[in-house]
Image (spheres, rainbow, N blue to C red):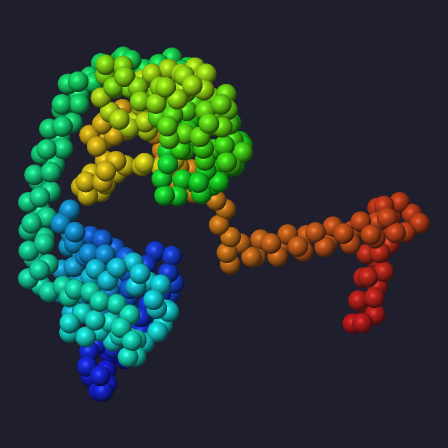
Length: 393
């Protein structure tokens, strides 16, 4: 039965709030008629279907169901399932309620817990969803035309770099047939470095710190082999760690932060290119020097990022990653390979192991506890046990 009740004294849709945001446990406790709280800009078909399967009375979105960046069908699916949609309630709303707390949503988009207002959002109607979809589809086509036009321009200007590696510094020649880990600053890059510790211990890869990613390596006890980035964004300790430093430079050779390097008395090489992304340059460096495997931490790129016009999803970034090809792998894939998942399916193995250990201890005690040889002690003990059982039966 739905928790929504039309007999409530106060008007609106009533239900229990469930935290279905990333990291929340609301989906595990969800019951039909609950109110799902999500944080999903441009909600996808898969995300929408997962919600429809648990039969919510309403979905409250911290973000917008459709930002206009991509034409997404998620809102249409939820509306087809007759689910009330409320968007743009803001990230502060997540901290303002407890999972399972009863709430009601008014027609004006106000969310109450008892008599207290805990959030406000905008109701999404069918007409708005259709309008957002049409505008997003038109905008996407226009942006993709401009995007690939800019990609062609980059190929025109940097064809020799992409094809023959013209201008790539010799720093990094030891990468040949070695595994390389490139660490770029990102929201969760420090945790990814921790997750790679077993991989780093086993293969001793070349470590490349990009901008503040070099500081993160130092903070976790590693010494970068190379640093690529603007010295103004990198700590002195990292620059003086002994790593070779590569400075991104404009096509005319002008390198920002060169004065800081000179003041510290550190040698550095410049890498002139028509991209200002140090991550792109680090990837080109590793690819040109024939690294066996390139593991990228931070600044990963996929088609969804390009569609959504993310800041790092530039034509240069796309072409750089295509250039690296099948040598390039995201750090998440490596971390998953080195993560041992335990659960109920492994419990039997530990039980068997415990029994074997116990048996081994018994054998040692019996074998070493008598006056005879190890084998004779075992035989005598076994015969005594057999005679005892015969006496019982």
